[in-house]
Length: 233
Image (cartoon, rainbow, N blue to C red; front, side):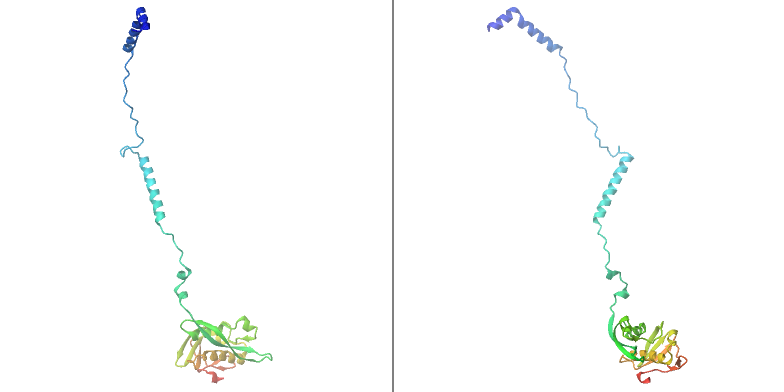
C-alpha cells in the first residue's frame, strides 16, 4: 500500500469520503425518462376537414383544370380574305376586248361615230356587259380627246336576249329623251347598233323601252319599230 494511502487511512479521511459518496448515491433521485410527446400533424383527415378547406381545394382544382384546358386549346386563326369573300366574288370573270362606238366632235363642229377598244369583264353574257360598258360612257382620258356619248344620262339596260341573229335590248324610260334632237337620236341608236353588231352572232338590234316596242323616238321621229342593222343608216 502506498505511503500516502496509509497516512490517509490512519487519519480516517478515506473512510469519510467513501461514506459520503455512498450517501450521495442513495439520496440522488432517479429520473424517469418520459415518453416523447407526439405533436399533432397539420394535415387533417377527410372526416376532420371543414367546409372552408373543401371550398379551397375545389377552387384549386378548378384553376388547375382551367390552365390545362387553356394550354391544350389551339389558337384561333383568322380566315384568309379568300375564304371570307362571298362565292360571287370568288368566281372567275372573263375578259373580252370589245369595240365600243362613241361619238367624236370634230374641230369644225361635226359629230361622227368613232370606235375605241375596251377591256370588258363579264361572266355569262358578254353582249350585256359590253352594252353596259357603252352606257357608262367614255373615260376622262377619252373625254379629253373630244370623245362623247349621245346615249341619254340615266339610261339603263334592263334586260337583253337573242332572237335568232337579232339582239333584243330592253331599256328604261330615260332612253326616250335626247336633248340634241334628230341628230342626237340617230347617233344614240348608231352607237348601240354598231357596238352590238361587233359580235359575229348579232346582225341587227330590236329596241324595247320598258319591254314595249315603240315606232319612233322623239318628236322628230327616229324610227325604231323594227330591228335595225348597220345598213339602216
